[in-house]
Image (cartoon, rainbow, N blue to C red; front, side, top):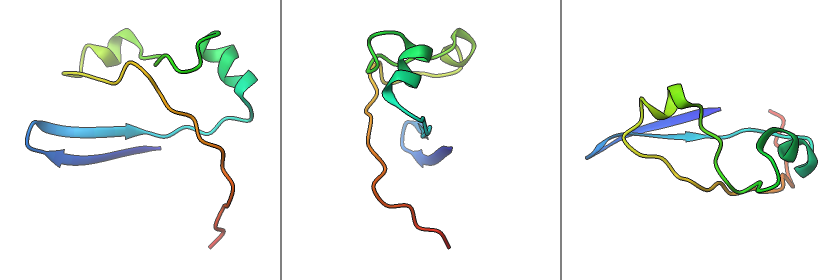
Length: 64
């Protein structure tokens, strides 16, 4: 999921991904699951981005 909002400096984008497990994330990101993985092509379009990510566990899913 991509969320965006306009801020004074431009546009802020938040990326939300869902994974089956931390092991799945390790398979993608490597051993340091909190180090951000940003493709070179994407990084070249951004003025700045977080170098670290945060992981949360889904505890309630609202089915509407």
